Image (cartoon, rainbow, N blue to C red; front, side, top):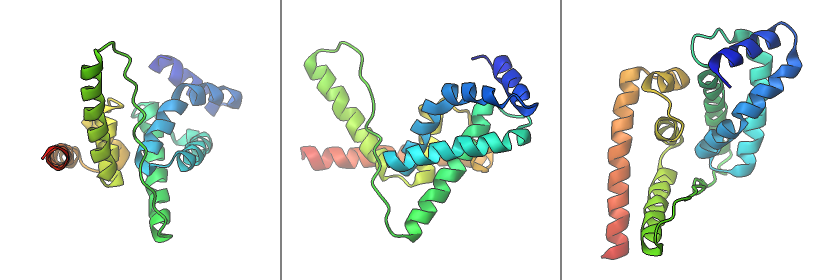
Length: 187
């Protein structure tokens, strides 16, 4: 779906053709679900929150002004609802571990190369799992969802320079965590 098609659908939804909102859900649902799962770390909670995100977006569509892309606006809702869910869970003292291990390797590497690559991804995702929820969001939004610094800034409410600094620190932190894990595993 092009940006123009998306904006046209949004305008139609705003004028009363609410059944067209399902096209937006279909187009964005897998990304929203994956993003939320990356933040909250629990598949069941992620599905519930993702549904709530679309309900909130539907009832708030009149507030969408088109200053950012619809996906950025939607990601902001998803981010805020996910962080809010984590705060609630933290208060209930029932936080759960993340499940970011859903990565597919479709390439035809030889078995040793494939195993080495799988071990690298496992190590990376284990390190990402150990990050705070906001840090996980920043690194995943930038690298997995190709969100720009500006878009991450809009989603999180942080300044662009703060996002850059956080991104740099998170990358350094991940490198240290991976190196520490290597030294524990190999010697």
